[in-house]
Length: 182
Ligand SMILES: CSCCC(=O)/C(O)=C/O
Ligand SMILES: [Fe+2]
Image (tube, rainbow, N blue to C red; front, side, top):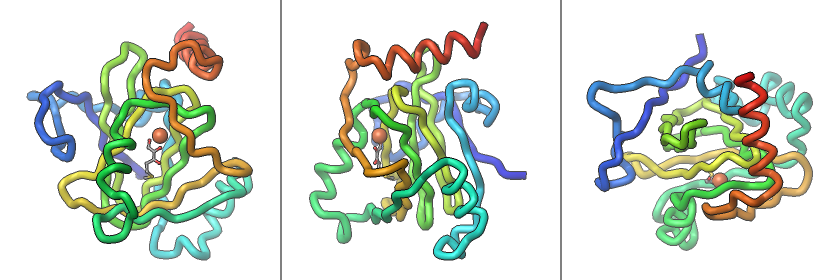
């Protein structure tokens, strides 16, 4: 069965690349993630260039755009600056869709009570974060990931750092959370 490891984070100021699990660990299930609008597929990243399962998702979700980003010190221009930017808490006006082709990384998302959930991404994990959710990204201690970025139409990479509570997309997202709970 496809699975993904996620947990509530501690608030230690230690290196962002560490797991930051609570003691005892407080795991978060796929079902919990779905409740905050985060969706997940496990794919075979060895065949990403010609994978009918990936193509089916792209067709169904309308992910017409894709590119590949390699996040490693010697590969990514302005590596330090970009990593710093990715780890600033932010939202986007569109869904963030990422598929890990190699390596590992963490996505952190805020839950409905504003607590950080850390999602461990490994090869073959495809995740969608909803427009309007506060989140951030970091490499882990392996310091390397290669990811496919998917988008509906022309990509818009603009990130709005918190606070962005007045944005309509943020309000829509909060409304969707409340509706899901009711
Ligand atoms: C794995 S892609 C780099 C991270 C990114 O694009 C983003 O917006 C993080 O929130
Ligand atoms: Fe983002």
